[in-house]
Length: 282
Ligand code: DGL
Image 1 (cartoon, helix red, strand yellow):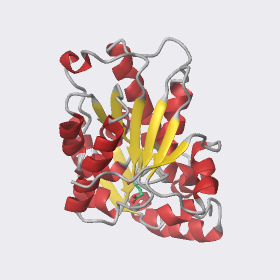
Image 2 (tube, protein in one colour; image 1 turned 60 degrees about the vertical axis):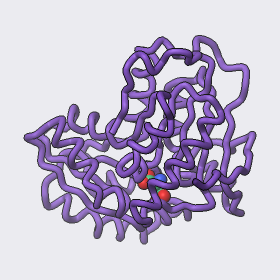
Image 3 (cartoon, helix red, strand yellow; image 1 turned 180 degrees about the vertical axis):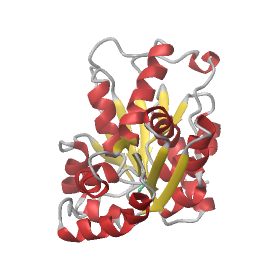
């Protein structure tokens, strides 16, 4: 859930402070990409927990522990807002993120994606796809039903989409066949809107859109959260008025051999200023 904090939370925050964004690994770079496109003056500090990815297959206590540690790591960068780019964390641990953030506003992708879907779905027949953990949490279902009680929400976990995106199999026949299998139930339910409820799925957008058909509106939770960050910073008068003099920074907990190739694919360019730091355990 989004924690759009009360104005008191903005006291003492500076417009030139960075936007802190974290994810279980490289997937959250799709969110960084959308935020950079929408807010080009802002400096981003990103943390990707590449040593412990994936989160989507882990137990709830582990996801919550990692989310707390990731937030604590980002807090050291004095951000003006913290974005949980990971759908799994947003679904299961956003309360912990807000608690550790200790007054710094926090935003998660689930509430942002749910809001856009509820607003834009023509007939309220909404499909949601995500990791096992996100879908079994029911977080998207609850958030959409809360905003639009008349909506019919159909959810489907699509775990193989994560490795397929990381392997760069974006238009491979195997991806197409798996997409057809995963999405068949949602097609049968005649959805008019489909929420991409995982950081990796925007990379597979073309094949997913092709399988569900052109009439289905695709909601990218990365785009949705970028819009929400802009609205929040604008309301708090915390948008940076000029291009930031410092470059954005990318922190990871491990630098796997394929990092550069995957990161470039998710971000659209090769990230510079990469630091390797492992979060402190509590
Ligand atoms: N970042 C995760 C999410 O959006 C996907 C990868 C993972 O399972 O950690 O849910």
